[in-house]
Image (cartoon, rainbow, N blue to C red):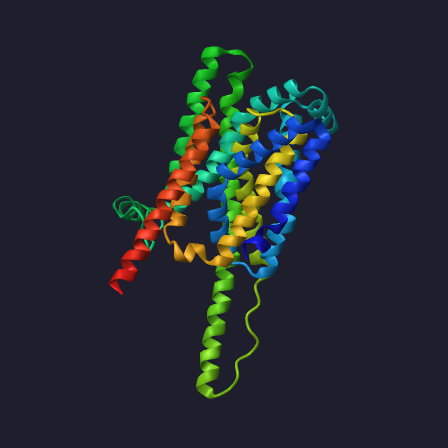
Length: 367
């Protein structure tokens, strides 16, 4: 099962490392390997969250996520996205941005770094909304009950998560603005950019999340009607009709939601990669290998039923998302080492896993 699920990840690893050696020798192999580990460590919480959504989808859409989705993740977010950011921020044509990435790597890195505030604001807001909507929902299973019970009560207030996210965005934008005006120069207008990017992230979350939720609800209603029809048929001694088919729109918007979610998670990996190399080819190879492992891990968690067995894992991953969103907002002004970003997620997920193990032991002992 393990080898079967990860076979594509192993194949991509071999091809990626070989491509690195052919591109720039054995040093490139080391850089690609380091970037792969960076991506996996930063995105483990991504796999847990993805698994929670992917388990609602059928085998066909799981395969789409692992095939079409990985193409979008590797080529879209790890290769095309940094180039698009440079093209927009520097007002260059896409071809000029690609030429710059390949010929003037220092200038390319400088332009991507300049665009970081808007990237961090967009991703920070999207991830913050995921975290807030999770902690404000009243759940039957609670990990940190002392914290989650009062938050669930607060969550009864309509649009509270949106209000809190907007307040945090305003604080981030004005803090950055004050910092920029004190130092003057080209960054003086970045407060407005941060505000616009953050609002765009919020709108993206509400539109994509709202659509996927709407179609998911429709699917659940259809399944409920089908169950009622089956019960009526059983009582009447007749065979039930055809089973409910997975609504194509529901699966499509869930897939779209997963892709935007993956994009938001990949921001810190793409930016962090510049601390290791500013070569766009090596960056795409290393982060692409890491992204493939994260996707395979997502499918593995779904098929093994890990989230059902270790019930607090999803909680830990959402707390890690909350921490990552705060880190992204802080990095608008201050630099934070990627090791800290990765460790926060690993520690929170590790703690939730251990709590799940202890809970399972206690339940077995009581049985």
